[in-house]
Amino acid sequence: MSEGRRGEDRRALLLAFAVLVLVTTAPYVAAWRAPPPGTAFTGVFYYRDDFYQYASFAEQAQHGAIVFRNKFDTRPHEPFVVNLEWWAAGALGRLLGGPVAGFHALRLVALFGLVAGAARLLGRGGLTGSRHAWALALVLSGGGLGWLRLWTGTPGWQVPDVAMGLYPFHQSLTNAHFVVGTTLLLWAVVFLLEARTGRSRGPWVAAAWLLGLSRPYDLVTFTLVASGLCAFDLARADTRRAGVRGALDLLWLGPVFAYYALLAGAHPSFGGWGGQDVDLFPPVYQYAFALLPAALLAVFFAGRGPVADPERAPVRRALRVWAVGLAALLVTVPSPPVRQTVTGLGTAALLAAALEIPRRWLPGAILALVPTSAFLVWRVFHPWPDCFAPRDYVQATRALAASCAPGDVALAPTDLSLMIAGLTPCSVLLGHRTLTPHYERRLAEGNRFYHDAATTPAWRRAYLEGTDTRFVLLPAGGGRLLGDGAPYVTRLRTSLLEVWERRR
Image 1 (cartoon, helix red, strand yellow):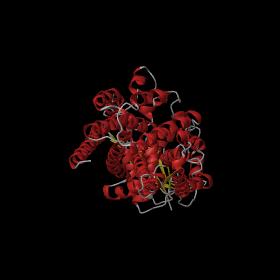
Image 2: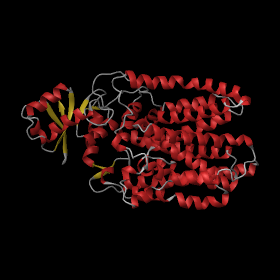
Image 3: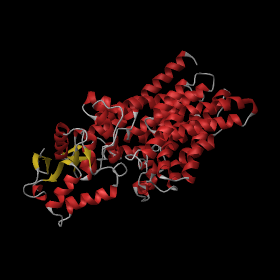
Image 4: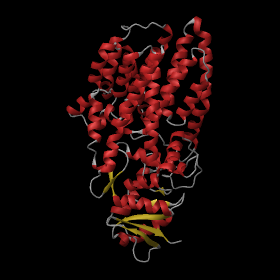
């Protein structure tokens, strides 16, 4: 490639990055600057419970931890979680004022990696010049038929390309965790393809380890791609030796998978992690509407464009393995962990379409695939009320952050408990649907504590003592819930709530 073409591609990459940052960051700035009266922006538009789960680990990293404990489990347990993404968000949060800011800074860093990884993969697929630039724009802006499904009355939670972060743009707009995973997945695939041309295996092994220790669902996708390429090699006599070598190289991923098997299988605090509530996932048939436009374009134009260099064919093969493998998983094993894994389907479909569509058709393809992304931008500029929290909640979390130590237990309503776990050193009795042990029982106990008129102060005090709770958050004037002479003193009073601390 000439130096002029390289410069053109670099300019396209930087322009794509700048536009993506501007479009996906502006709604957050608007929400922070102009929240509804009496409220503060929570820092997230989608997946608030999962976001504060991630923040609960990043908050520990902010204070120097490398191995994390489950702050939604109040039972004594040793730290066991290693996650490099959450560690990085905590390290950035130490400089920027907290884990929420840390995740937003990490999202911007990951966006550059996302754009660069997509550009590198498209370049290995033979695209250059203006075709490369338009193809990159398609990958970074495309979506499915989510806008049409919503228009015809389908509930939002049943629309995968609205609710599930299937496409790179949707991920960039809604969740740093998605962006980090997709970025590392792209680079792992790029380095794997480069290793197949004679380069060192080291870069792809390192990228895959980073991926696995950040978002393990995407490590499953990478392993699927690598295994599929090995299978193609093993099926041909002239590449069988390379296939055996590639299969043996996959053993480098064994320790990462073994770690997660140990985490989920042996650690009592994390046995249910990843088993998301099935009701949160769209029906399988809805994925067809989400993926159909990009997939049809990829299939329709497949083989119609010239591919001068046969060494670039493995890129197309890798994307086909990626897309077909995940689609087969979705159809045959539609379990909650698989639904988490198949979020990479949209990225594969867009990359495949971008590689196949001729230059003259790419602007039209972008216009056809951008409506759902445009809708999501509009939506986050008009956020839901639960994207904001009362300012009293912010005051409470600041008070607790200054007072509680790791291992201290706090009781609060579920939405506030999520913020406490994410923004303070406290552990919480209520909170996350999969990380809180015996979540349904805890929820029933919380309802009895806060909402049951028949509950006596003596029961509440016994419950707090039995759970070794140091801090309890009550509605304003709620001291009567604990009764006279309770061993608690008030640490904060606002118009909405009170923070009580047990005397020591």
